[in-house]
Image 1 (cartoon, rainbow, N blue to C red):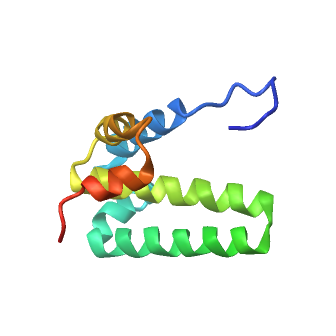
Image 2 (image 1 turned 120 degrees about the vertical axis):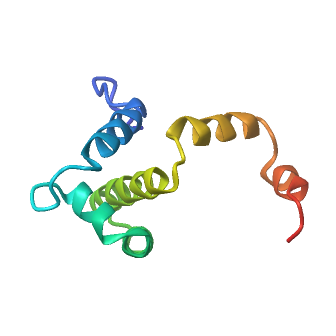
Length: 115
């Protein structure tokens, strides 16, 4: 989050966005980008997640803070869209992050089942 003390933005916006995505799922695809993405299917949603991730990485490499913020917002939107399509609630992801809180990344990774 921003270091601006007057900034009231926080991560709850992600839960509100997830709710709006679900509410728009069956809207008219001619009027709603979200409905259009659902209508285009999982492969298109996955493609958009990948595109936005790559664009975020490019802006990170370019060290363009404004573009990183913008592309990150696009990435998070499309990731939430993918979660919704897969039936994954944001609360499930938050619970997993909470479960991992305070655990070394190396320890957590080592505890995963081997493929």
